[in-house]
Amino acid sequence: MKKLLFSAYDMNIGGIETSLLTLLNYLANKQYDITLVLEKKQGKFLNDLNPNINIVEYKINENKIIILRKISNLIKRITFILKYKNKYDFSASFATYSYVGSFVARNASKNNALWCHADYLELFKKDKKKVKSFFEKLHCKKFKKIIFVSNKASQTFLQVYPELKQKVIFCNNLIDYNKIIELSKEKITKTKNDTYTFVNIGRHDELQKKLTRIIKAARFLKKDGLNFKILFVGDGKDTNLYKNLVKKFKLQDKIEFIGAKSNPYPYMKLADAILLTSDYEGYPVVFLEALILNKPIITTNISDAMKDINNKYGKVIKKNEKDLYIAMKEFIQNGYKIKEKFNPENYNKEIMEKLNHIIN
View 1 (cartoon, rainbow, N blue to C red):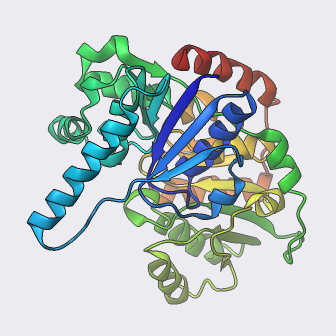
View 2 (view 1 turned 60 degrees about the horizontal axis):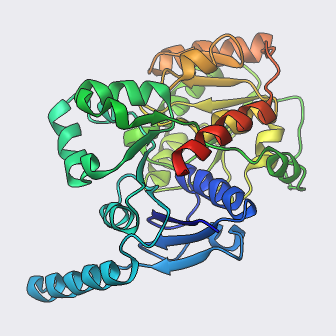
């Protein structure tokens, strides 16, 4: 039985964690021996992992006394190397930003991969020096493979690191479509009525997600006297910012905060359309979830949206509230008919073939 190791930060609710959960459970069902190393052994998704997956915590020492912190973390690194050095057939750092995860994956196997979930040139505002600084701290050149979950992100990475072309692989995230369909049937207190309902699902982080665009667009839609409702499913450091803005614009009757949900799918099922207003993403899991539940999408031009979403499963807009307002108004007044039937079985089959190549 092949031994695989994956590293991440934690298993709290999020897009990266959802993708990791799906991937690990799929691989566990394929009879791989899997170890998951987490910086923090916490998160709602821990209980959803296959019980055969071995979970190890690698918690760095954060002592304020520098010398004690350095000695403690050095001992941890040496201990890990002695116990795990090249003991696995494959290893991957799945949470790109985790320096611990990078160290763990690079040492656990010679056949290793760095998983990347964002368009980093977009994230760092086209500053190639910042992109290089980020990836050099992760020792990206020491990885055998560098995996990107969107084709666009892989291409912008190669603008910065053209010499790493042979290492870069584009591989979308797997999706557990049967589970999503089943979970969407869970009963919730909210019920569907004649109001056109938009749903946004995700972390409340204005720097990336730009949910103020939705709130400002809603202000104009309300002035137009349109019949609509917006549900925010999620939370984060900027939740209070959004709640205060909703209160300021007197939109309490139009925008409702549901909070973070380990099962957001009943709310998606309730929706007439899904909203995504980010400035940058890797490949949003929400895209796939919406397609499985046959829900049209309004999204900013991020990731592979122009190729995968526009004029097939929804509308791609520029990154501003005016274009968002126009698109939402059009959906409320005319609806949106999805042009193609998404086939999740074929989608997963292509990814499984790539995963077999990556791992083996």
